[in-house]
Image (cartoon, rainbow, N blue to C red):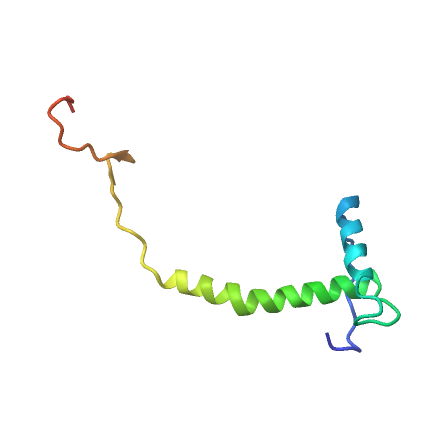
Amino acid sequence: MPRGKPLKQFCLKMDEATWNQIDKNRMSLVGVLHPQGINRTDYLRNAVNAYNSYFEAKIIPRVERTKEIEEPLSFFINDGLDVPYNNSSTNW
């Protein structure tokens, strides 16, 4: 994320288990990637940016491909009732 641009404030509410998982994951980075650790705000900002990049690279192309597929032909008649098959034991 480019520095120097004004940030918009947002309140993020999650249950205690989710906050604990976030703290566990961000503290696991201490000494490996971040010698002094990383605060929650930066961790969540990095996570959202990484997810957005993944979403644009992987999910959006799949969605665009499915929009190109034609809708299937309808197999319903009579206001949504299934088409009865030809069976001599039933009286349609």
